[in-house]
Image (tube, rainbow, N blue to C red; front, side, top):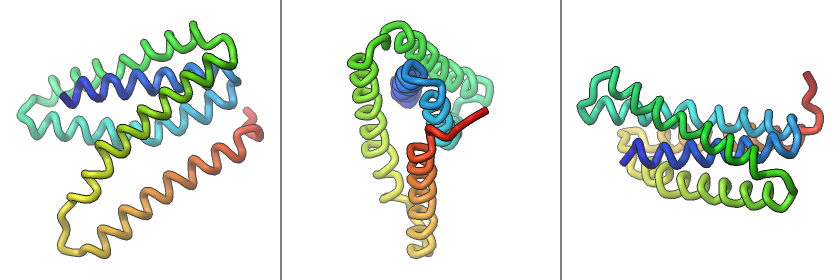
Length: 149
């Protein structure tokens, strides 16, 4: 279930990145950076769950790699169909909905049910992480036009 869910999630990541690159390279770059920031801990968590469920390191890596490759399928589909603004907006809306679903259905219950002897410390660390992510995304959206290479 984790691998299938992660594959669908990575497919949506590819859709979002492809639609963003169809708009502009700056938008694609900032979307890629945002996806990278949320995928690193997500993939590490999936890897840990696969290891905990009894898979070998090799098999867990192969399953993680297989689900990660679905992002390229989403990327290629999005790049090929996102030729006009309306299609780009639809792809963005679908990808946003999938991201919200994953965040609310997967991450939020995990945060709520995490057990700790120091409740205030858990509260502060979780909120610091969430606020850091939101601030990074806000800065990316505000200064996206000023990115230059």
